[in-house]
Length: 106
Image (cartoon, rainbow, N blue to C red; front, side, top):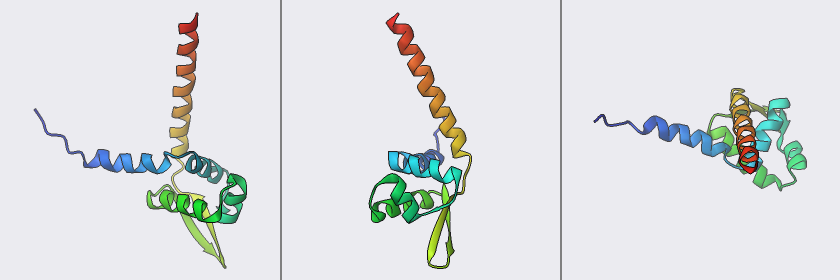
């Protein structure tokens, strides 16, 4: 039997874990529409600035978002737009699960 090198799966899991929080999913969604600073995201999310900054740091360390300093302000943007394809896949899974549950009720 062939031994599997788990490294690539561990790396994949790290990226997926970075998105595995409702606030981070919201941030990714917001940044897919436009670049934003921490203050703007804080207003939308309704969390304190330090919490939003921590979430941004996790997403940035995973390579999903990037930042650029403009004067005293740091703007964040979605670096890997392909995550939106992943979001579409998640939506399809949810729709399929809902349909299957309806069929089981009939």
